[in-house]
Length: 377
Image (cartoon, rainbow, N blue to C red):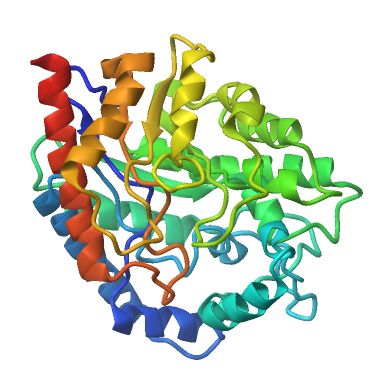
């Protein structure tokens, strides 16, 4: 993994806006409608190439495929794992704790977010085993092809963590959640190791670590981190990064667990770099915890300096200020500029207009350059 050795590097969290016609194809496939696999594969391949090109044009240093082939970052695995074949066991979504205090808001918000309800979510009703080799290989080939012509480019690929899979597709088969997490860790190890073997940085998406604190009766943060560490035990820490967030939506968030309360458990995870929200108004202040929490010598941070839920384009000076604050606390070489979360978490339900997404990324690049001049001179 590249470090900010002489300037602050830039990246993002993973998902980017998908073209409308690709969204239509993905949802047709999600509904079980006949879709020409060659047509879908070809459209994904073109979309990945375009996503990489636009990231490079914006000046992003560490790029990815934009998750073009995935209808959602967390549920794509139901097609790559056995155990999720019974559509008669739909999943009840966890009620949002922050909306409980505002019932009229909750009703209004549900109407605004009808698109994400189209995502297929079913419970685990059988033994989990990895069968997604072909789909994974297509993703690896698409990203490899897209970055092949970019000199010195570093690329990452996202993958759902065992914990977030269990969060979105809960257990109805294993004797307990611990056994379910262990089975998921064993199954997903193949995907994680293949991403790294292909030469990419592995990003493990772990929003469940923070979200699970809002819901009783789910496995602990410690269990989730243990399952993650078991799954990636054979991968060098410097080839991995972990993404943490509190739910990628514009909402109250007043029940979010403070970063201070979970940072110890998060830092016990094996990935070297930790990506987390640092730009939105509920979590921006938490940069200050690093004045009292010593970042382990083998860790780096990727704080969000762009809010992924608003169409405001952050001023480069603000991006610079955010980055300098972190750098002064943990060291300039241990900071990479990132985004709070993805800009296309669920296909077809963007919160930020696609054109503005790349304008925001360009502003981040400009702000990182300002911060680099300030930090390195």
